[in-house]
Length: 220
View 1 (cartoon, rainbow, N blue to C red):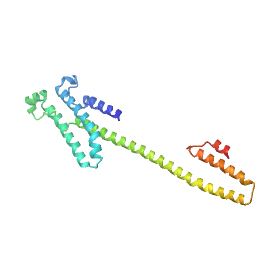
View 2: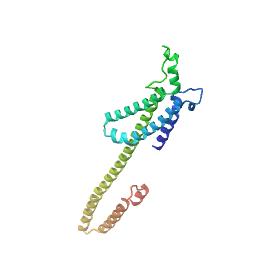
View 3: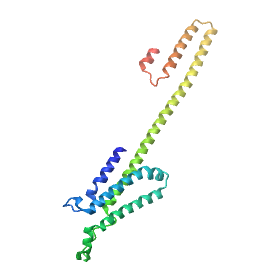
View 4: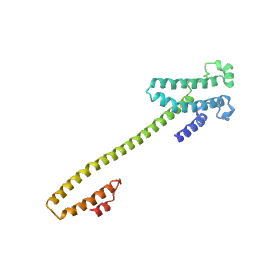
């Protein structure tokens, strides 16, 4: 998330030099129109990035208020383009051109457009990055939670399996020892000792998630 914020900041600050109109033969900072547009665009887009990421998406879009979210994003776009257009149309150089005789000829085309491709592209890019980054982050968080739930479920099933296996084994062994005692067999005492060793081993090793094969073979 921090990296995406840095990338967004870099795009907002650098792309206007390629997308915004100014005389490419001179420094962009010699154009009052570019400087005003650049400052407004940087402040507006960075503010929109954080508002969209931390407020609009979690509280509006996540609540499935898609129409409201779309209306807010579209309104911000029109405000952004409107201010950029106003800065352009009120620029001193543009005003001088509009007052010149050339502007009254049919060959003249106004150099300021409301739906300017540069600002529109920059705005939509910020929308995509802020929305996409948060959605991707939430997806990774959901995946981590799902993996944790799966591990917990597996551990629970394993513990349940241990609790199911051990009593059955114990009861069967006790029945066998009981039969030996009824027959007054000398093997009864040895069976009790072996059962004691098995139960101690089971109780101790069941606390571990993994047991080495060599250890198992050694015990058998």
